[in-house]
Amino acid sequence: MKLTGIPVSQGMVLDKSYILTAIPEFEMEEKSDTPAEVSIALIDRAVHQVLGELKTSKLRMAGNTDHIALIQVQEAMLDDACFREDIIRNVKLGYSPEAAVMRAAKAQEEMLASLGDPYMVARAEDMHDISCRLACCIADKNYPDICGMNDPAIVVAQDLLPSMLISVDDSKVKGIIIERGTKTSHVSILAASIGIPMIVSCAGAMNIKDGTMVFLDSDKGEVYSDLNDDEHKRFMEIAASFSEEKAKLKDLAACEALSADGERMIVSANIVEPMGLSKVIENGMDGVGLFRTEFMYMNRKKLPTEEEQYTVYRLAAEKLAGKPIIIRTMDIGGDKTVECLDLQHEDNPFMGYRAIRICLDHKHIMLTQLRAILRASAYGNVWVMFPMIATAKELKAVLDMLSEVKAELKEQCVPFDAHIKVGIMVEIPSAVVMLDVLIKHLDFVSIGSNDLIQYTFAADRLNKNVGYLYNYMDPAVLRLIKHTINIAYRAGVECSICGEMAGEALGMAALVALGLKKFSISPSLGLMAKKRMSLLNAGKLAEVGTMMLEVENADEATEVLKAALPPKYS
Ligand code: PEP
Ligand code: MG
Image (cartoon, rainbow, N blue to C red):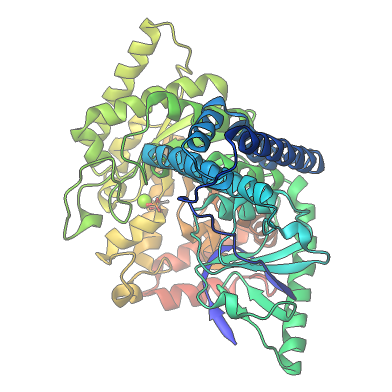
């Protein structure tokens, strides 16, 4: 049986399935005749027990800061006086202890979710998790726990909550298949940060039989079960060669990214929240080349405050301990819609009201974000980057806002890095054409190939019908990139790329051939990128780079490049 889902983190693994039973549901309206004092004593005892379990998990997770932070959040929730008061209030209203807990938790979950901030939404998930655990403890029911897993296995669940993952020895969890779930849920981020292959939204996953062999290819988002002997043998070989490759890659964590001819390359990471930083550090990457901050604005009703943003940016900057972190101002619009801004429906959102275009109209959004970024810059090597700049006039407008915020902070004696590096995404062809003008005001540029390709060909990056045009190997794109690199280098300005092109083997080779030395990619690809880099001879590829610009189409450019690549390069 073949099932498909959405890939969360990469890997190929063959192992036994471990089907996690569904989380018990508790009736919110359940009343009880038990005297209130007895119910309260029962609840307090359960809180004590769950706190003890969390403490044990914390001890087991010593050294894993992400896990410990999550456990601490749940501990604080259980210890929270308001939460306890609300539980007691519900008990006094006659609800059963379990119902009282679930009702108090629901109120907290709704409050957290209404804040809309993805961090708070994730906290609501934590609240749900910990209250279900507490209710199970009160009712003496089993909380579906991966801890019950004696041998390594691929966990299959309808849904998975963060505490289930943090309470288990993760070396036993070989993979995760979730029937529901989303890519951006806390548990997905956690699994990706640990490096467990995982897919979500895998319809039919719960039909997999417990304890049977399953092959999970989380790169492709595919699952195979009910394997026959031939399939079993084939998948065993694939999984073995994948894990061999992965083990070899680990040695590269301590190494700098170097090309085969000894050129130092910079491999940074694209992140959406500070949690992704564990992988960045673990893989020995050179910092963060793109922090997509718009995710802080999504799934919430109110805009994120300066304080919220400052806390997140500062945390990230501190975690990177001096390595650069490029914070991109919000890029809402296109396929990223938000509730907290009353944006009208547009027929053509990618060509419409997006990123800087919104901020120029709603200055307070930009000013708040810039204040938060600048304040965080006092605590690390923070750079600021503006997306979707199309004209010099737009650039001047955002730079004026930056100066305004700097002056205000200075006057208020708030510390910030007065020499913060300022850059733009080069992702609109007009910015490439006018780069010699724009560059005079910049410390760095970062090529946004995802958008640059779509705007070059007028081909929506999400529209499969025009996907044939969306090709980074087309000389039109390669020429724009080459022009950007030339203008930046000539001006002594740093130039990098943060579009997906850099994460692909062929894309990276093409960029090295064009003379690029700085790349920002998904943290999970960090080691692979270092390996690829070590196989590329930058000096020799430069000749190919020139040839790629002179051919007529993408196929010819690909052919020219492939002919120059070492046989093992992939
Ligand atoms: C890009 O356009 O290449 C880019 C990195 O930005 P985003 O994908 O967030 O638009
Ligand atoms: Mg972009």
